[in-house]
Length: 396
Image (cartoon, helix red, strand yellow):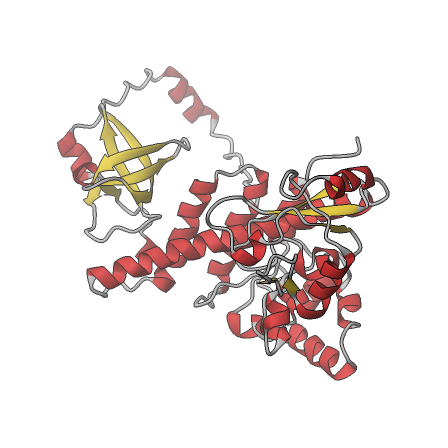
């Protein structure tokens, strides 16, 4: 089949294969290497960075977006939310943590899909020699991205090295393959009547030289990439899916020897916290990828014959009655006043105990709870309790 689905397993491996590094080391990487690493500003703890990365890596495998976001917020909030701050300041911090979680999921999740899809499209260039840029089509699209919506450019054009989605933080755009016949139809269509459009050679050349998309309507738009705008391109956001599958040695060849030597030294000095403690350079050179840990059930040792005989003769245990409210309260802790997204909670639902994590606000005096079965419920704060010993974000 020519148009095969995006390989989700490959997308998941792409994310889980990113070494988690501190921000100080991340900032010294080149754009190509930054795209292969994972970091969160404000967090240096390696175990937290790895858990955050692995939560995002579960998205291409079918994990629920909202569920993963709630868990991710729970992981990063202790580093970003000050429990001692006044309520207004703390609420702003909680909102900032939620936005950061969304941004991390979009950037790394979309990059993974884009890198996998790019490989498919690159193999199909004989049949689909052109690619079309497409936005999300809503009111949140940036003007520079909206101006590019529908533009059709040759697959091998340098434009795609800096403008393959997601080419900026939070970008939700996409690119799709186009045949030569489709491109001719778009070019022949009246302006605004088709989903795609083919720029004239003069428009494309002017965009290459100046970074301005000017279609002659008197409203040129700056469509330069973050690297093209930055005073120091090495510090800017950069994304080229075509380079994601190049060996590190080939990436380093793009730089002069002093720069390449400095990068090798940096990557050789930063270790990745996985078995064997490889360096970041070794991680990539050996193509080490740590899949999420799998649960291994260890069988219990066989019981002595006498004990087994007694158990077989014992009467069946009587079913445990549903807990009363008093018993339920005794086995749980009150909901803390400043409960955070990601906190584990329990509540009684018709006599049955329901468990989940706080995933959002739930009205004037309630909270949204993501239940263990994947469903959501809006529960009054007065009905929620913390399980004794349950996870609270401030304790992580």
